[in-house]
Image (cartoon, rainbow over all chains, first blue to last red; front, side, top):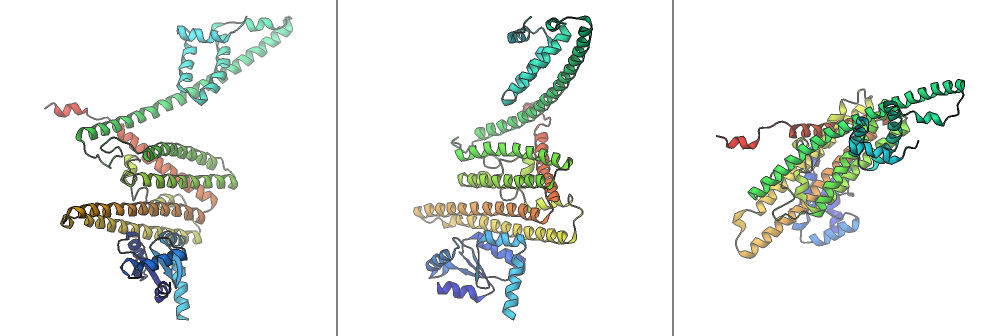
Length: 102
Length: 368
């Protein structure tokens, strides 16, 4: 649990994924398209991977990708896509940027 | 003089009285719910028609006599009969029109079925999968989930056409905002139903859904991950929407951009999946017997990812529709849904025309 939270806060945008997961890849591409660099943690290549997966599920994210912005869990692909179409994804990113610099 | 109902039937069987036969034919065409209603009124109207044409005047004999009263009543009766005739003639014209329309629809359907039959025959003859990976497969077993989907999708399309007509009428007749709101919500719910149906079909056979074989050929040309492109929706609708006020214009532009970005991301993800699947099946990975099994297993696991992609694509479609309606006024939203509905209807009609086009019979290709 600690590891997940620690990694989640390590960067502005953090994606927990699996190396074989192409949806995770797609979400990463989306962030790139809007000019954001997301840091990707592949839990299947992590020795604590299974624990991390359980932790993410307990936090409410049942599948990868699990996306964190500013240390807060946003959700999986569905949530990210919905936010983006509502025009709320970029403001969320900007809001965290401003908080970080203040 | 009595008019037993059987008297109506007899001339039809004998084929003597033209008007009876014509109406009888049209009535029989509408077998199903409608016919009983049409039939009942038909009998009444044609009955009075019959009076005029064949000249049975015995109805009058039931009225009390008295010259003045009689001439008044006769005049009234004449009026009434003329009125009934007009009514009958009008209804007759409407029925004829509906009949002709139904004929034309059937003709197109027949052409479609012939094409389908042709395709199936070829598939059986050559034993391989035809274009699009038809669900019938090699052993002829049809997945019931797919059969259900095809049936339900047929109904879905019919309902869509009905909703288009309703929207068009409402807009032309300047319906109230509340009425339009109901229609817009109905439209959005209808799309939601489609996505639910597709989710079930994806579980039954993801390749069937991906192939787009369940749509018409022209729709398939525009296919993207199991359905229409979300960004295409916005393009179709844009021209309908002028004038947009400034906040709307910006929101619309942003929505276009985000849906395009989301689409690109999913497209690239799909490409990656294709590459991954291909890699999983590469020959040099077959080392020993049991590896073959695990290789196949790994490949099949990837199919679940396909389901997820189609699900995401449908989610994107639904979100695009909803956000679009949120940005627009009710009136604009109604016009947009109508524009979309009619656009897809036109694609389907185009496919039907294409299917029904005159072609050289295949026997000629063997002539030389």
